[in-house]
Amino acid sequence: MKRIAIYPGSFDPPTKGHEDLIHRSLALCDELIVAVAVNFQKEPLFSPDERLDMLRQACGDDPRVSFTTFNALLADFARTVNATFIVRGLRAVSDFEYEYQMALMNRQLHPTLETVFLVPPVAFTYLSSSLVREVARFGGDVDAFVHPAVAEALRRKFAT
Image 1 (cartoon, rainbow, N blue to C red):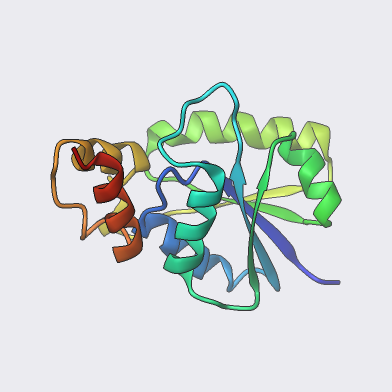
Image 2 (cartoon, one colour):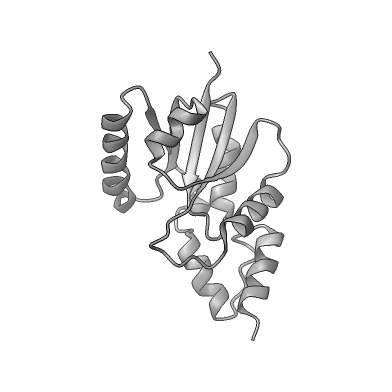
């Protein structure tokens, strides 16, 4: 049986922490679907297509990784792609409560869907898309936190 995993997120923008999790997830599955969540209640900085493009540039062309968007319940999306588990990152204890609730809800909606939590390297523990956006918004250097293509997209977005 093929082990298909989903790594869902907003990826607004993708960070080196996301890249790390994508690459390490490949040790656990045969195929990884990186799924950009389209949330109509949020106002993202980048469009879903821009985020997909940045993810593709940042993560290379490993044939085991595919990139897509979804705008449904994650449990339902998992069924449509025959995924057996979800990959999520836990940076800090503060992430755990929310992620735990989501994992339990997904288990209720899709009893055979597992959630696997990966812990980032210490260097990425503090890193989040919102922090990267804030640094970039005020002209700070984000090169250490994101792929060069993402850094350039942020510079263009905030150019005045």
